[in-house]
Amino acid sequence: MSQNNPIPGTYFMDGPAATKGYPLNKMCYSFNNAEARAEFLRDEEAYFDKFKLSEEQKEAVRKRDVIALLEAGGSIYYLAKFAGIFGLNVQDVGGLQTGMTTEEFKAFLVQQGELVHG
Figure (cartoon, rainbow, N blue to C red):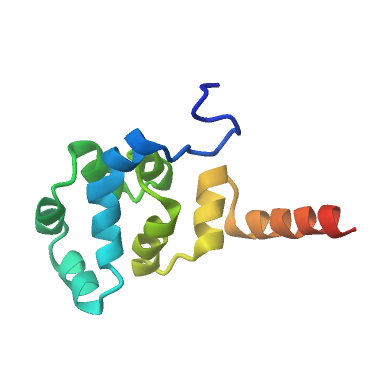
């Protein structure tokens, strides 16, 4: 395990990752605007070019691959806006990130809360 990923399944957001992910995160931030979401859905490829995404970022978006988006410098806070376009919530993304179903991930969160709060 690398220094940058001390906890399995996590992605460290440091300066280089933030720089790498800037175009992707800027695009996802634009999804706060309904018109931007509609523009993205009309022509994803043109929208990628508008924000100058790398080929790695474009391919991750095309595949809707959350892990690849994180590896491409995506911040989970901005990626949540992207996921929302497709009706996914934070628990859905958590499940994708951990390899669990959404229901398994929700049960895991409840279990962790019970361990902490007894």
